[in-house]
Length: 495
Image 1 (cartoon, rainbow, N blue to C red):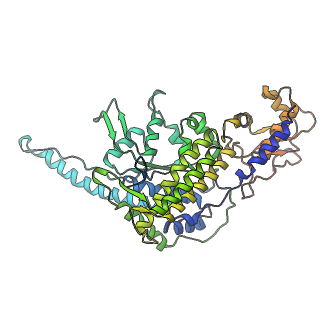
Image 2 (image 1 turned 30 degrees about the horizontal axis):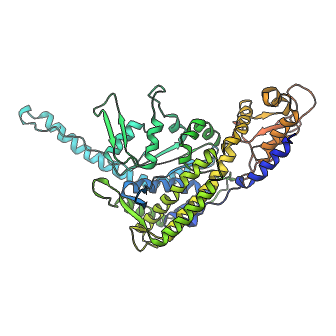
Image 3 (image 1 turned 30 degrees about the vertical axis):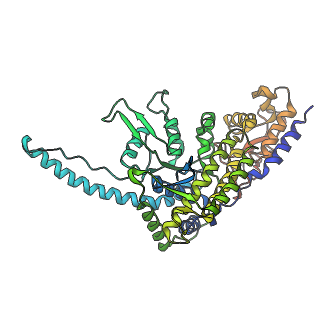
């Protein structure tokens, strides 16, 4: 007979290292991004990854269709980066996102101002046209398009229209990504396929959207290039993605970071104006890059030395990915491409910033490739950790996910006896019920309240308490990602 408790303990031991958060490799970021992220994290008192991820997406968004990386004749990668920062409410995700978006938003604000001036001229021309006799009017003035580098809260159709007017591509950002996921098929009564269209943006593929209304019945974008960034709470992420988006590959396309909670400590740190100015100058330089004719990307290749570094990574990463299954295997498959994309982003920033520029702006060197690989490997470790904490690591953990959902539906607290009442799996297995809850505790997904009492008024029993990764009730963290034991006072209230 299998010892269920021993089996859970062994599984927890095998995966315990996936729960340890590794510091973000800020040294792999090119200047001035590195200094901006470091100074911003010091000023906000947050983990650098909360700023680095949306900032990398911003860089990828403004590069867009101007530069793609050609790995070989049949394999090219755009700079599209989809990132999401994960944390509970109050973990400084929004301030970090605002700081990361500041450089690209500065450009967008300037473009809005230019468009507002152009609209004033257009209104004057339109008024003059309307007041002229019909025989003298000529061609009716056309409203000027608004140049865009970033947008938020867009539908699939509106984004397709924006990309027609801005073929270089865009950054799409959402403070709360669950709203973006929830907008799929919002106007199609369940019969649409917006998520399928969104998947085209990740690869920069052609996009065609057919509409029933509007002046343009068919919208076609030859290279739909879009980077995406936003933030989300852990439990919301788990529910928003669900089985559907784990299977269709949507979740695998996101680079994730879920740094441990930090205690807030007041400081007087700020980002120096010199650092901010260098970031603005770098984004202006990225925005001024010229692509090929008809928005055909300029292809950047690998130097011979960089190709050797890439091949070593390509083969070793494949060996690691082959040991995985399910959603995590899908995420690792996308990380292969992300290593190349991150190298392209690092290379392009170095090319325009003047800090350690590559010898050839159209050839990725070993330094940029190593930086891209280091970042990709960090994201691989974080994917293992996030998927384990959210209970979506592989199909073999489906029972654990179901158990967590059952506990969450009952307020985040349950005893082993009550688990037997609510789950047929443990109806006649008291030891299995106890071991299942112990396994969740061992993996950091919950704690024991040893004085929690009994729902039926009998003798006191231990109560399993789900951590705030899932429960709607707040739980405590000591700041290093490990949740302390939840105790109860003499009246049975949590302390």
